[in-house]
Image (tube, rainbow, N blue to C red):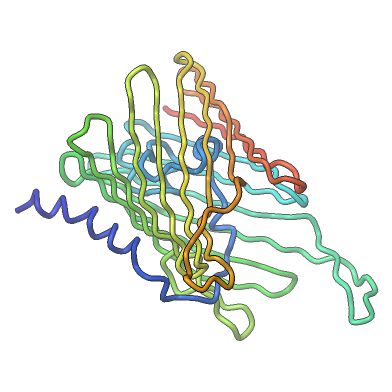
Amino acid sequence: MRGHKVMLLPAAFLIALLIPEAWAGGSTASFLKIGVGARPVGMGQAFVGIADDVHALAWNPAGLSRLSRRELGAMHAEMFADTRYDFVGYAQPMRAGTLGAQASYLSQAAIESRGADRKAGGGFAAYDMAVGLGYGRMIWPHTRLGTQLKYLQSLIADVSAQGWAVDFGALQGTPIAGLDVGLAVQNLGPGLKFMDERSPLPLTLAAGLGYRLSAGMLLALDVRHLPHDRQTAVSVGSEYAVFSAMTLRAGYLGSLSRRAGGGSGADYMDALHGLGAGFGLRLRGYGLDYAMTPFGELGNAQRVSLNLRF
């Protein structure tokens, strides 16, 4: 009976992933959609089925249970329009599972305000932040579950909003050696209320495959659906250990969008826009990762992550 329950767990998440797009109207707290960690982003943001480091807090909290040592990680991202995104996370393995904590902060340069006469009226600040506490545990052989509770805050000028969200994740081994299935539900919560209007969070339903081959090769495939935003994305990623101290990565994130005005409502693949590449350096318990993603005329987004395992 227990074995049947284990097999039903991934099926339940897959059913949720295929829920019709019954919710509409878009979402708020868009910073929760930004990829966290130079390693996952360098792999095209295909990390739900991998989730084997402290960045599992941002992709699939079940992956926390894979950590055998304490891990501290930090990321800094330089994006376009003077926007910066920072993340810090910590994971503590214990006998009863692994605890994790994280904080992320999106900031940008002062925004110029203008009055009704179009004259400059000074600048104002805007930022978004999230603080989370997560937990992951192996409950049966080859089956891992995890969850995370997050506090959210957004500010634009003198208007702010606070809220909370919950993430759930699962990792399931398969009869194929080295192949794992990952499933995640992220940003489940009541939304943020600015002034008198409440907007939903970017609820995300994700499924991923992670395949560890011999000779230091890692392949990943993710499908991510945001029902409130009517968006679906498919990402593929790869990682290759050139030698024990250096790893190369490449990936692609493709968006499936509803055809505007299409009579059939069929989805189509947008033009290539989600290329990612990077590398990682490891020396004993220290790690340095770098990733770059192009944004055309807007420039390139660059991420640097530092990790310490001890």
